[in-house]
Image (cartoon, rainbow, N blue to C red; front, side, top):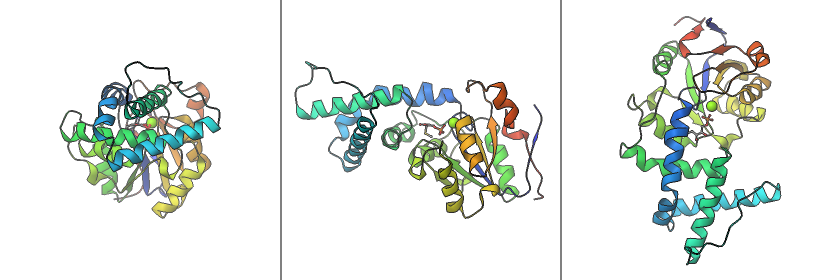
Length: 261
Ligand SMILES: CSCCC(=O)C(=O)COP(=O)(O)O
Ligand SMILES: [Mg+2]
């Protein structure tokens, strides 16, 4: 695959995580199964804590929103193993979370709870964040050229910091100048990228966004950012039209800086 020249006016890289810095398999085969396996036990253990109460509150608001929008929501069957009000409330949260996860929804409510649940797994060493081999050397090189590096993922900022802070390559948080999540807006909305540029303090054309998802690339492009689609094993196949329209890379090392160090 050919190299891509990064325009000279680019001073910021904005990076997606899943499918870009990190294999989709790590998210689908490690992170998500951890949530499914520990959800009920986690809620039972933390139910009375403020953080958990806030997470549950946000999930309830999301469910109300979904009902208003007529999105299908889980229907609660009468369950003989549920006795107390707390057990019933926990079961409702479990159903809602599993339903959202089955649809791979990127709601802030779901992502916030997931981030809080992964904390213990990362801190105990049970889970280590996976990062493609080409990612760290490329970021270090870009930083030597004075570029700034930001993350924009649907995963909560806390989840992002856990993934890179407890990664297979050690604590990588020093590589990043900042993090954005869906609190700034959805990744498929152009407005989110305009807000990110504003928050960073640069023009959209000074940013290069790397992602595996075409809808995100389109939203960023519409906001005036430079974009490249990242093609990694297991990522969604691109159509011929997408391949013709977007610049694509299979590794970060294919990005060639045109500015001098
Ligand atoms: C960084 S947290 C784990 C990944 C995750 O939950 C997710 O939704 C990833 O979405 P992305 O925007 O990085 O593709
Ligand atoms: Mg992605």
